[in-house]
Length: 111
Length: 450
Image (cartoon, rainbow over all chains, first blue to last red; front, side, top):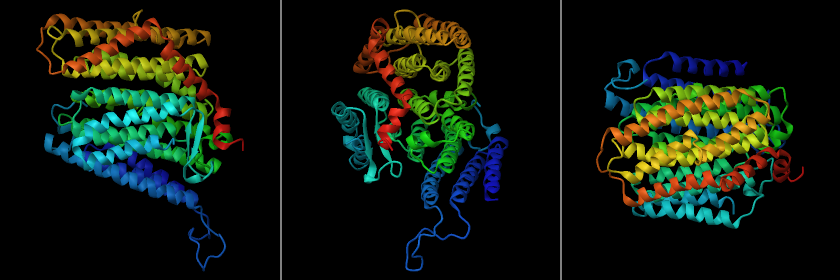
């Protein structure tokens, strides 16, 4: 079930990238795609009824969900945040140069 | 020992943040140290990071293909950092991080690790692509590149779901053939943006024609060649060459689209950018013929393209008026453009001939037809640009320093040398091709005969 959510989120993000004219909304769409991929990542490691992958006195036996996707998703989130920050910087620069964020209103830009 | 190849540029990058004054020294010393480490090492070597054996840990694999690619990338880096006046030294840190990530991308034997390095490469490319004149071009590149990164991650995860492993050798060994199309399709999208395949190459002209001389030179040489290596590694070694016929068709469309767009441009830089797209398409379709000769020819052509673009782009940015008063760069430009067209005596002729021969020997007549068509179009626009730059206007004295002019001229003489005696490039690309195709010895080297 969670798969469908993540696929739907990726679809929403791509639709946003194609249909929107505002550059900031492109950034939002990008972050939606990232979220979709991350949810997909987490969902494949999930096992019904299992616990978080931490050894303690309460969980003496390894009755865990798959810990690897969780490690991967942390890395993916960090990369996503970095790219989002860089994208925000570029959006600010675009706004400073052209005075607008709407693709169609920008002058002397080749599309 | 192998991990030093990644660690030293990273150390250099951090040092250049703290001591800004030594950046120019670091830019030269780092590739020299890397090259001398490479000179000591002999492939095939595998290093398991943290002592975790593959397939559980991350291995760094130095086989023939990655050894030679590393050698090429680090030499190109050295060559670029010797061309001092192409650079804004403020970008020195980013440039060193780019070297770190390309080295990592070439060495790594782990799919998720390659995703991380790909993203670092992409982020440093976005920063290098940014120029005051075109923030929108860099932004476009960032959006499309990050979507491609998400797809790359998605296909890596699919491979993990299917095999329970992220190790390239292990995935290649155990991948179920029923999911290969899905994984390969996502990898086509993920790598297609950086590899400049047709529907995904819209960012190239905007970024390459940004007006800064360093952007197209770095992206068109170092990053392009690394991505070509990665395409070979993933599609030939990991996915056993399935799905390559799709890449083949996309590559051919890219060639036609790139050449026709290049013909229509009024701006030299945009024309060169589209020409670079077309050459990338040609290389990819040659690689996807999957025979040893064709892959050799593909990497040979990629090397020639990199060498020519190293000359063409800086000259195009710094001298856009005319060669009347700049004879030396003018001569270098003409030689490099003749090599891209593929005139006999120049390096490009050899590789195009080799691509033709390998396509014919496989019984394929579509690639030769497209290649010859592309050649005709290339002649049309490159001759036009040469005539325009040499004869129509005198131009002014350029701001290019004497030693940069000398390096560019030496490179162009090297192109003629390769055209006459292609053995050097040929043996190098043959080794890459053989090593990429020899999947079983790669698996054995990484997994140790598991």
